[in-house]
Length: 124
Image 1: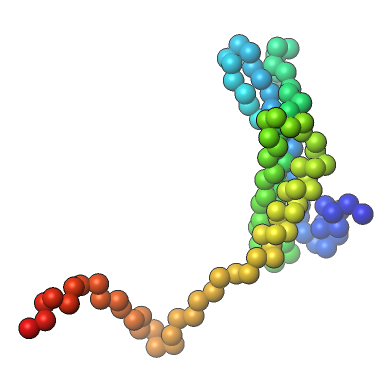
Image 2: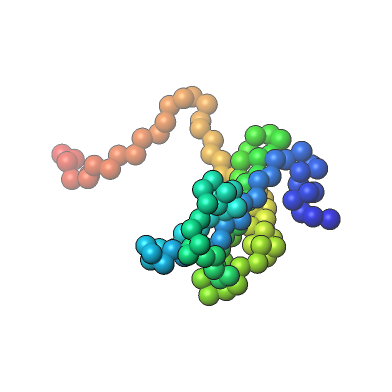
């Protein structure tokens, strides 16, 4: 079964965005665009999509309200495959979700111990 579908069935909200590299030869500039961003304004004919490079961003909001985001970037030398990018981003997302949370305890008196950084040469 699809991993995104499984996460959604568990009650989480999952958003997946794929971006491809486009080259504009007039301005000599590379840019990353998703399908939605391309649909906002028509691109000129000379702006072309490159088969190499791209990125996939996965955002997850759990039922408890915790938000996690992971981005998988494909090298400019490798061919961009959406399914590989999705699986890599999901692996990173699940790795972040399973990380232990750093906690610290403050003493109950409400008084914080202070650290004196002054040199001890002032003793008489």
